[in-house]
Length: 302
Image (cartoon, rainbow, N blue to C red; front, top):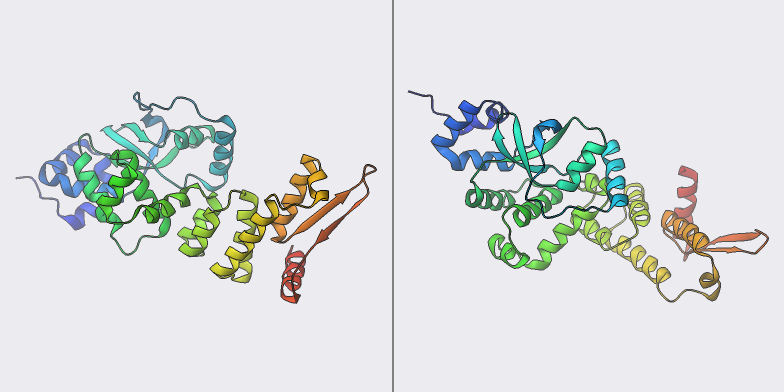
């Protein structure tokens, strides 16, 4: 009689199962639901050369600039969000979701990448297991966001159906999903508990990556509250709105970009002026002594 694989043994031996087809088949026959449940929150490191592209992938063209940026990020930080693959046999997997991440990882020269592994016909059980995972208390905001994204991509759920399945309103789900568009540095800070959900939600409302990263540094250095971060973001958006000064509007695009970089770095209103001969001035504005001290600290720490 074959030995029964109970939950504790299974949990510790999941990676062994992935490389042993006979043991995996035995586990699936005994308790397929338990196998799926464990696989949903187990990240396996799989060799890139064992993963094949999905022949039914509807997306065939990718923005090359965005792909290059993701590749550079992966070279520095690795792949933060795992891809999802279907297990064909012990040394062959087929990509289900994460085509862009997979391509960028290949371009970055990675030999193995993190992946969630699915079985051949586990759609209904997968949905149940992912929803069960979301209810866990020990997940950070990025892990919750990834679970929502997996439900949408792998179970073909619309935002409305997803909202019904997990018992959350659509606005809450949207706020979580927006976190996955944040720069990798910020996602990592959320995972490490350095940023609260309130901070993360505020940063997700900013389209300027340089300013997002500047705010991340300020939050870490000064312990800014969510309200303080929201105030800085509001001022930044006002500065970039149509309420620019006449001099600001006259700036050439390349100088306006430089001015925006200074504003993002200092988190303050910065005016750049320059005449045709190259002479000019850089003015950093502040509202009170507290802001002045913050600017001084920022310069001295640099």
